Length: 102
Image (cartoon, rainbow, N blue to C red; front, side, top):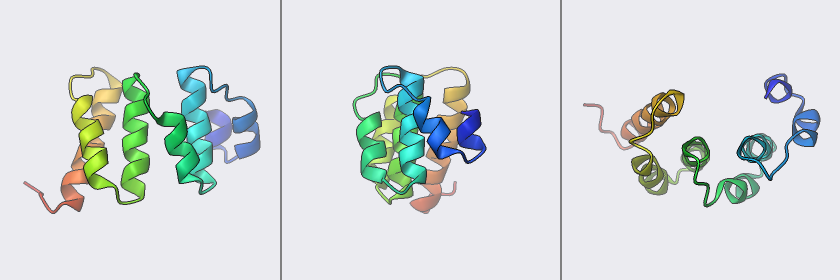
């Protein structure tokens, strides 16, 4: 992730193995940053890991697919740790987009 955070997409992509969850996440983030949302969604599709599910929801939100993102976020509501906080922040975005600010 350090290469990705530094903006070195080539190095980040070269180090991302799509056979591991972390590698799929990095490859999907690289694809999204390059504007290839379809590729990012393909890489995150069907992921069992909550981190990847939340990342998929985030990509969906970025292109206005709020209902699908909300469905995915609902599926990881029981997650623990940092992914739970990330999921809650994404759910807050969904509520904001839908105008439900309560």
